[in-house]
Image 1 (cartoon, rainbow, N blue to C red):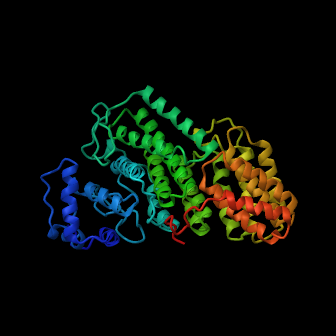
Image 2: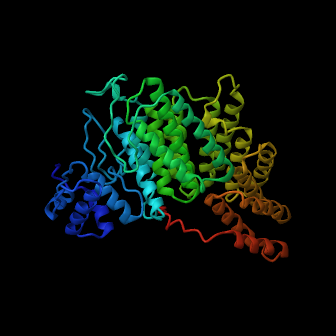
Image 3: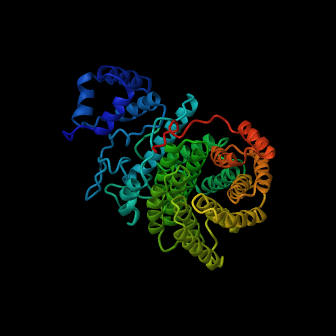
Length: 500
């Protein structure tokens, strides 16, 4: 007991709208359903949790997380409730302040538990038909300040913590999720199969978008969390953390693709933690760069730049030139969103130099294999098209890069091609070339049925806005009508939990 109010629990309690007595009764009922009929919570105990900062013993934090998740219709974890018992010694950043709203970073022995708990809650929301609204995105500055020191130091592994088990004596971690099967140690063949499943999911996402496979990826990640509850030999443990990081990035990207923005951000943070636990700093940086891309898409480029500073500085010296180039293209997009044309051009120039400097003598990691020359041009097209909103002369350069990206795109990259067509059509509208814009916009419409991506709808809405000045043209009027039919009535950014 800290003697201080638990502000996180208090805030969520206020949102839920329960009385303290009602919450006590719900805790007892839910605990009994989870196999703990002996639990007897009363109003005074709930008051101590909220007003005095008392941390209840297991299973109460898990019970509360389940209750708040169902009540609020979004994933609420034990960390969100401020109910994690801190076991580490030594200096640690205060995680109870508003400057660090997500309780970052987690203790090393909590990463697998957080991963399993969050995915279990996410799956529960899927089963019960919730949409995950009601949460808000943490600011990029808050995330980067909370994680800076953690990402720049060596991970403290379970082996070096007091009382840790050896690789020969696996250590079962604290149970956290509700959908986790009975964990057991695995071997190299199982890890190889998991790594292959990541490639299958990644190819599907690149081809069709995240809508159809998101739940499968989250379920697979939940199982990997159970596997990480055991301490395996070092080489297998690192590979398992790599699988967890890759799946978490995919889960985040697919969540972003279907408009579950706060959920996506949480997965990106989980991915960064998992990558660092596995000793893969470049992967941790790439995971954070996904969160930055999300911020730019949602109109928060300043937050994106905060995250990119952390992603680049925390990636480590082993980061390949091509990975650095990819990170710079995201930074350039954020700069373009703010109208910083000179900075954007300088950043893209550095990205081109790094991309060419990568001789390919070191094989890229699996998660970088999709960033090829076509993607480089696609990101440049997006950056110049975005800058063209501030400086219309940039539209011509955007067209050139988009056309080159389309020439280089290989099969199975339908979503990327769709984005290229949208960038190209939008740049043509800005460049006062409605004839060509109509052509490429229709090619984008043809491709729409092949993907399940809310991000494409958002980009199409931006293009639709640009058609307004040409609405008197009969051809563009017909295009506008077709766009109106193609665009679904998806939730607004406010309803998707985006804090603007």
